[in-house]
Length: 400
Ligand code: BGN
Image (cartoon, rainbow, N blue to C red; front, side, top):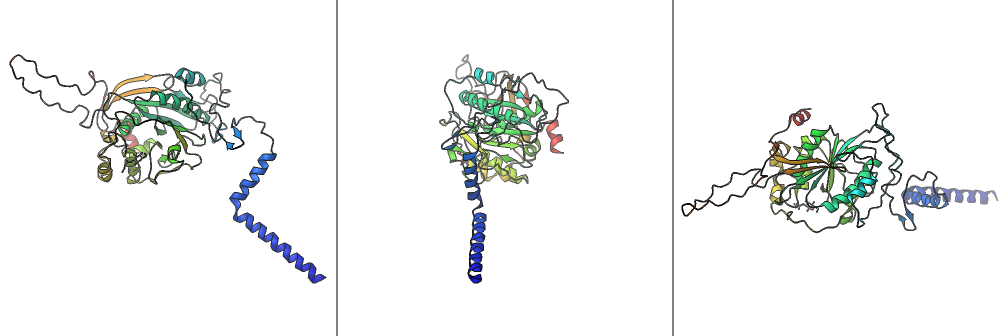
């Protein structure tokens, strides 16, 4: 009898240990199942804050404007306000993103009453811990810009940032140059404010999770790690396109971005290579958080695929110190402080330079016949020209 009892005891002990081991081995799945059951039995939380939509199929994402309305103008910004919490209470996770027809900029403005002239915002009842500038290279994409502004303003407000949005518009019809526009954007944004972080943002990418915080890391950050068009994963390991974040120091350390990639492709890879050549590395949010939806569109006019990109990329190691922020030349055509963003229109020249010497007109054949008209390359009345070389502020930062 005694022998029988101890046999059972051993058997139960053995089964118990097996259960514990199994639970430990399948910890992740085990936790998921437990959370799932807890969720079924839990009442909906009374805070009502999250604004997330739960459906039978799972989370479809919350309204990006949920619970922002109680931040009212009544709280005017004071100097003695406490710092905002390290993690914003408005951040909740996945966001619902769709592109309904009929959206107007007036509607975006109405939904963002605390955004002031030039697309600036500060949290009304606490001192922001971070100052972030968003730099958006742009031409002929007003339709996309409207959607980006609709989502980006409340997204940044959820993160309690002090922020400003800069749209850098390329003047004229010459081939688009994304990276050079960003060099201009960096300089013009820093001229206005001591931003501690700059987000270089494609106009057609909408963030889908507000835990993707628009603040800088200790190394350059690639934020658009999971885009819908690439099946929500990185297309290749070194990809640095879409949305990236650099502090002013990071930016100057790698001599900014290249100025000579005209047309589509390669400039983002060059920027990625510069990061490592300058002794830094790329950081990324998790795949779950760095999610973006792309607004579908055809390849733009004036942004043909750049056939020189392969050769140029092969030479980045030799060229990065000679071409970048220290050689960025452009002219400001206009600067408008619009209600939802600062619109800076820049003339960035052509592959031949800002104002390449024009060949002398062919001699007139017959006496008295007027010489052929020479096409004007730059703006008729060139305003504020940005000369080559770093500005005083940039040199100071770079020697820091
Ligand atoms: C890559 C492009 C990137 C682009 C991604 C995603 C090049 C250089 C080839 C050596 N790079 O192929 O610029 O962002 O695709 O579309 O073309």
